[in-house]
Length: 282
Length: 278
Image (cartoon, rainbow over all chains, first blue to last red):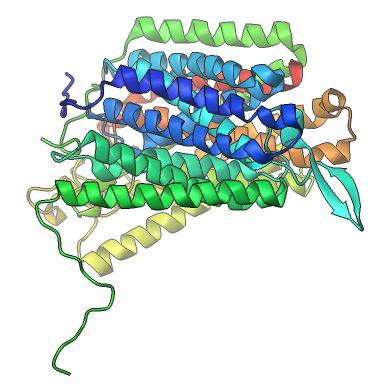
């Protein structure tokens, strides 16, 4: 017995979002390779844009999956996406320039097997399960790779485990001050996991609108990108980190305003409750 | 009908064919590990044991979800993934602390289990505190007439129209046992991966053992967290949201979860070990 509680009415079909998501994520990830070609770190912000593209795709996948009553809450979907994604992403970083593609393929294999396990062994019998878990593992892996590229400017294993500290004007190699060695990956993990599960959790219900949810995803993504860009000051040059931070802040302000407009559009009525009310007659 | 009100799709039935396929997949994954990286086969087997401990242990934890928050179902008022992550990660921290202090493996795993159990005990106690003194509801199970441990009658305390509320004694004990299993399982995964990385990464990366330590700890911890969440969510899918504890009829579904966790842990563990083999 499977109950599909909400149907997608109108809006962009899921297949289109999926194809656009994977293409734009991979393109943005490869654009960070300009860092290597030009020997700078200026193009790190493309990693953050890759994260946002992947998250928009992922939150729509969560919508497809959680429209069936899976009974475990929406956040669990975000957790399994990044739990399976981080495993694929860490192995894929060993493959040099092929890393983003290997991450996508490996995550798809892991997600497919997990989907089979949940649908057949655990007897979930949800039609969208296998495809959704496959997609979400890919989203998790590519988002984490995007965060890695945003914070370090690279996405290969050696670059993610090696950092530099400057002591008395000398640059020393260290493994502690790096994306993996400093465990920045743990923060990236949760920044992504929260950003992917929040939008559908917040927007679900009879008044669900696709454009409003996807705008909220972009807003959450830029908010995560702000934090990641601040953290990137530790690993890449100050100028490059400032570029990422400015892009993240501009994107966040824009998407936040757009989301507010869409929320007011869909609301039955709204009252602009001021933080401190003006008390009259005193 | 909203997504919250929809009834879960999965029933309690087993699927023997899929279980057999799962066991075959487990053997194939172990075989791949044996051929590519023979030294990794024993760590992988122990990782599978850790994953199974997590999958089995989570069944004991009284998960109430949204109905529990409204006092309409027994259990802790949050989802499986959050509870398992809380209990398991507390265990993982305890175990990692013992591992850093240079204890042997058994002590580390037991410390991890105690960390998880302690976290669940504190959570269960404070939850009951809030239920009884904050919301003014007594603890009563809706699934059994008498508490299996204390023998206390439940029906008199159960409000009409609810499935029970609060945390009865058996659920409390279940929560602590679940925390013990999950914490020990998570720690076992972390410990095995840490040993593999500490042994193999210096050769792979051409650096000294002291330099490799932060990378080994961080990567092993991250993989352990990832595998923990995968196992916890698969178990959440198995019990479809809420469970009262070991006395709940849904508890009988654990064989499915054991096979599923074994396959998932073998798969994720294999990928994690391949990072030093490729």
